[in-house]
Structures are given as C-alpha cells and as structure tokens.
Amino acid sequence: MKLDFLKDHGAFIGQNSDAHISLMSFFQPEDKEEKLIYSLEEAMKECKEFDLFLNGFGLSPADNSFFIDVLDKQPLIHLYHQLRTNLFKQLSSISFLRGGFLPQMNIGCATSSMQYMQAAKTFEGKLYTNNFRVFQLTVLKRKAPFRIWEKLTEVTVGEPVSQEW
Image 1 (tube, helix red, strand yellow):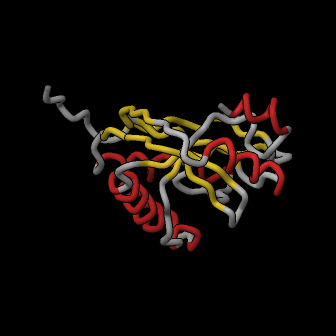
Image 2: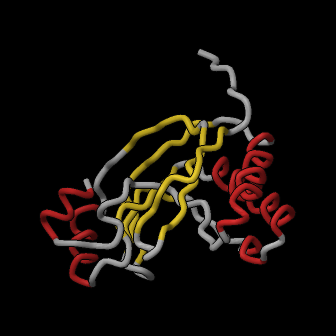
C-alpha cells in the first residue's frame, strides 16, 4: 500500500517504515534505557493480549496524514494509559503526562498538499479490514542523526489469554 502510494505520488515521511501504531514518542537518555525497559515490562504484566481490528481508511488534514482506522479503540487506549502511568511513576518525566491518544495505524504523515489530496482520492471510502492479536510491543530508539530507528527491545503483553472457539 505504501509502496504503491510512493510509486504513484512520490516520496513522503514514513515511506520506509512499516505501517504501525505509535503509542508514545519521547526522549530518554541512553543511561536510563534499562530502567525504561523494566518500567515497560512491569506495566505490561498488568495487561492482557487482545485482538485488534482494523476497519477503513482515515485522513487527518491537521498534519496531512492518512491512516487505517482501529475499530475498537478501548484495548489500545487502556494499554496506553497503563504504560503512561507506570512510566511516569518509574521515570518521573512530565513527557508521560500527555493525556491524548487516538489509536490508528499510520501509513503516511506530513505529506505535501498535493499528495494529501491524492491520498483523499485514493483512500476515502475505500474498504479495508484486517485483524491480528497484540501480544508484544516493539520499543524503538532513534540513533543520531535521528533519522534512523533501531529496535531496543520487545516487551510481551501480560499472560496469553486462552482462546474460546
């Protein structure tokens, strides 16, 4: 999907990353990474795996972005608040006090006005559905010159929930 958009409409921010849902983004010094990972693991013990359902495309004129919408946002909002609260307690950083979070799977952001109009034509009203089980979080960190992301760790979400068929 991103590759097709890139071929048809040119380069955009996020073109090389996988579609993803960003729970939060903040600066953390390297010497606090171990404490950050511990805080994340503690917060995730209190959460359970869940299914995430994607449904349709959305557009945000505020930042010229387009995304895939999340059908039931509550599990992700709960996960976000769990993380935010625990990270604030453990790391005492006011960056975790930001309360707003709108779950969506980002495809492209900060596109040009022309690209945004093309995205609106391409994706508005188009059907898309998918689902998957969320069982771990991938924690990324930026490396200087802050354009490169690398995986810091993966954190398992709570204990697996038994499936009822």
